[in-house]
Length: 141
Image 1 (tube, rainbow, N blue to C red):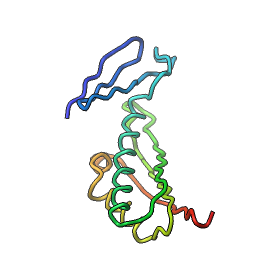
Image 2 (image 1 turned 90 degrees about the horizontal axis):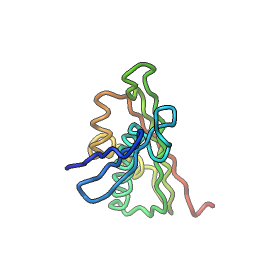
Image 3 (image 1 turned 180 degrees about the vertical axis):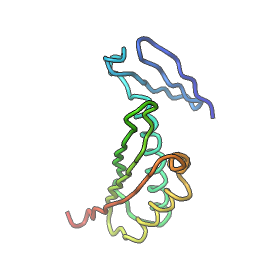
């Protein structure tokens, strides 16, 4: 896997992936940015969230669960001193669908956290990461 990070101006950088995609990263105005993109630490958290949400959705699909929506809401705490590393990350999944079983959702979340999500498993070596979930039954709405 290869990426290229190119400075644009101020605190703005373009991240160019080996798969041909580009993302804008930028800093806050007080740091010379124009607030036109994600901060690098937000990008890291977003990548982890995308990794685990992808896993959970795929595992539920393979379990033949009728998922209509999959959201991962992530809250992170950072150290007060430099380096301001993540100290705690909590992932809250909101899984919507028809006839979803608690057992299948719990299994998907646990498999992602413990076996499949490379990003969260790597980060968990240095950060306390927790997960929970809620199931929204779209038939009940």
